[in-house]
Length: 202
Image 1 (tube, rainbow, N blue to C red):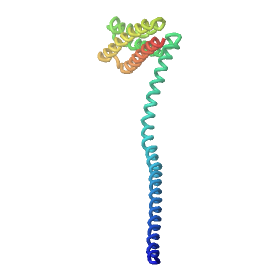
Image 2 (cartoon, rainbow, N blue to C red; image 1 turned 120 degrees about the vertical axis):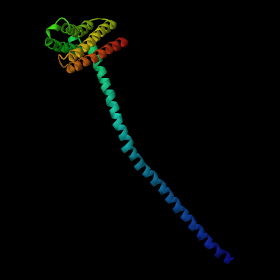
Image 3 (cartoon, one colour; image 1 turned 90 degrees about the vertical axis):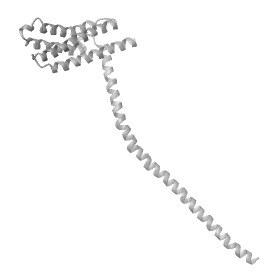
């Protein structure tokens, strides 16, 4: 009996040691898992914030800025088409009138032989751009307005050719006037779209 009890003591001690080791191992495992989670939270999230968010921030900001510029431009066009009280308040007319004022001194330098030809044709076409914008402004229907703007666009293309011809004949350099004419062309298209948009919303 005493011998059996003596043999049982080491087994109990070994069992307790094993249990203690398992507890220590389990504790270390849990601590390791917690450390791993903590490391993931601190490094992974930080990496996402430093790389992913930064990458989105750089591209996303450009996208937001791009859409904002487009939205602001469209709002200005709608405001221009809706709030102007006279044609003189339209930016497209102001640019077209500026072009006319440049055409007159340009054609005055042409040879005398061009008085009844290129000089007269260019002046007439330039005037037609601004005049059709002004005339279409007071038309009530959107279709009438856009019809006059379309006529103005046709006269604009006529002037574009006259500028090319002027330069090719060696009469003058017309690159700056061509750039101004291109601005008028873009404004004409945008103005017509704004009128059409107002018609659809009405």
